[in-house]
Image (cartoon, rainbow, N blue to C red):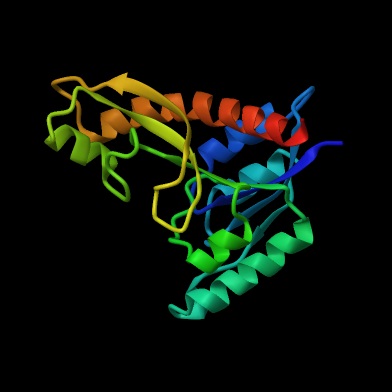
Length: 192
């Protein structure tokens, strides 16, 4: 029996696509839902094209009422009965109550070598600091932003002529390799 994976996105969904594409064959998990907080997220159609159910819980009608938004998100997730939730470019900060509901079963990919550069603008911050390496991390989600146990990392060198965009493009290549690998290992650990 395969574990059920829900993937939360806010944009184009390139990491979601890589996760879905790799959950085949002997992989211990299968995608059951792609869920976005934005109805215009490009990843929704990509998920449908890959044969995965896609849905939206738009955050805007909740007018800053995070508890109500997260209640709607939880209700939709519970209908899909996921064993694992993967945040893949989901650009909403989640409350402790929501995170605790899925504690130990929610993963996130972050575009920095955590614990450095939690939050946004990670590539610009790494360049500005004079770092020689940047990268990405997959971690368990905890109530503290980008602070959970790290399950895997991949790094790339920062070149003298890098811009935040050029660095982001190279890091994204690593994200597309790291996240599927970590998800496979994580899911296998849950089925042992």
